[in-house]
Amino acid sequence: MIDVGEKIKKARKAAGLTQLELARKINMSQSYIADMERSRHNPSLAALQLIANALQVDIAEFVSNSSEIQETGITNDEVYLLQLYRSLNADDKALTVAMMSKLVPPKTRYSTSTSSPIIRTRKIAMGG
Image 1: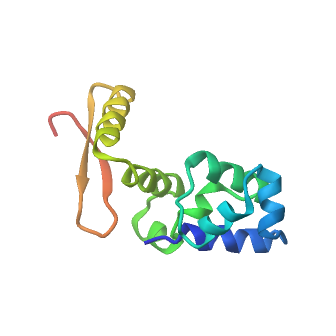
Image 2: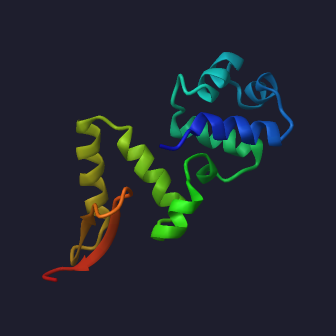
């Protein structure tokens, strides 16, 4: 599994910032930054975006595994969305699927294959 906290810590250090400096930049407490880096708290999407902006990195860097992406063709954004989806409770997952299905053209459906550790999603024409 991807260690988001470790990636936040690595990016923060690469930017030459302390936890306190990052916390001040994004208006959060230093203890919350420390807890995220130690994986005691999972950051929200909003928190990850603030951190990514402050550190001038793409938010996908926190949740992607580049070797898996190269092997499967899954993009950083798709990995990030999968991580977010997995963090939802059952009701929120159902709501998310319902909302996403409204965005997909009616003549298209999606099928999942679990032939690898990463769920691959491919578009299949209706009736196919």
